[in-house]
Every structure is written in structure tokens, then in C-alpha cells.
Image 1 (cartoon, rainbow, N blue to C red):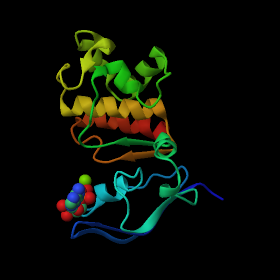
Image 2: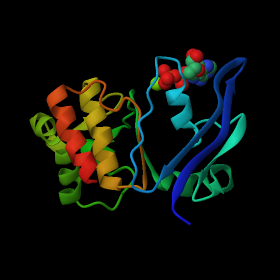
Image 3: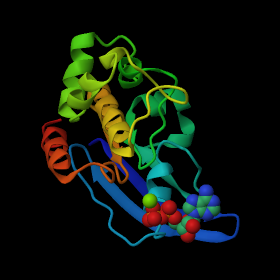
Length: 186
Ligand code: ADP
Ligand code: MG
């Protein structure tokens, strides 16, 4: 069977608001699918059902024919890389934040991923470079800088499923094009 991500009859109801109703979608291995729609049309809701940030109200999300609720969170999330509009960085160094998802990565691999994500340049201007602390009490980074760290994580992890939800919303156009080219190669 061909590897496939499938949404079958998906509905998602938050409290009493219907966010998705009977959505069907198939994504074959190696394909890129874009979701278009106005604010509030349910794009974020749909993609968040894949790594199980929420569970479906009706229907199912399957990967290779297996319901995402039937595998462990660990195994599911090992196979998914996600970049969101609001990026969460934990208290640690830039290098540690990029290596999240591939803890045994070498420094070379981390820097390579950062370059592909257009992040290397600003990281090198931080007081301690890749060893600078970020997160709550760390170096203050802009939204676009945090997004690029999050994108570097995905490049480094190189998972079979990549979800980009307004992933470059805070990144300038030139950097965005660079990231897109690198992403297509990935
Ligand atoms: P999009 O990403 O397309 O802008 P969302 O998936 O964020 O759309 O939102 C779809 C609908 O679900 C909206 O009406 C939104 O207000 C609602 N919604 C999203 N997240 C929640 C939540 N955690 N609790 C309740 N309602 C939510
Ligand atoms: Mg959204």
C-alpha cells in the first residue's frame, strides 16, 4: 500500500462551535498540499488533529491506514514536524532548541539546518551565537526569528510528515523564498 495521510469524514466541534464538518483529504507520499481559506475556516484545527493536539469529534485521521489514536503519542510525533504561527522555545540554548527532535545531532548538522532555515545569519550575531540562551528569561527574539528556529528544527529532524501552519507569517519575503527552495529540496 502506498504511504498516505488520510482524513476521513472529519468533524471537529469545540464546545458548541462547529470548526470542521465532514472533511475528506488524502495526501500521498511525497506530495505537498496547501489549504486555503479565510480566517476561522478551520485550517489550523484540521492540521492540529494530525499530531493529536486535539482529537476528532467524528471521523478519523489515519497514517498508512492506521488511526492516529491507535499509536503512541511518541511514535506519532516522531514522524511529524510542525511549524506554527506562534513558536514555543524552551529554556535552553539556540542549538538545543534546534536539536529538539534529534537530540543526538552534531553541531555541523545543527548549523546546516539553521542555514537552510535562513537562521544562521542572525544566530551568529547573538552574544553567544548557538550557545545563547533563549526562552522565558533568555535572549529576546522576534517572531520571525523564532519561526526560523522552528523551521530549522524541522530541517534537522526531517520527518516523513511536515506541517506548516502560517510558518513564515513573520518572516520577510526574501528569507521566505529561500526557505521555500530549501523545503522543496527536503
Ligand atoms: P483558521 O486556522 O482557518 O483561521 P481555526 O482552525 O483556527 O481556523 O478556527 C476554526 C474555528 O474554530 C473558528 O471559529 C475558531 O474560533 C474556532 N476555534 C479554534 N480553536 C478553538 C478552541 N481551542 N476552542 C474553541 N474554538 C476554537
Ligand atoms: Mg490558523
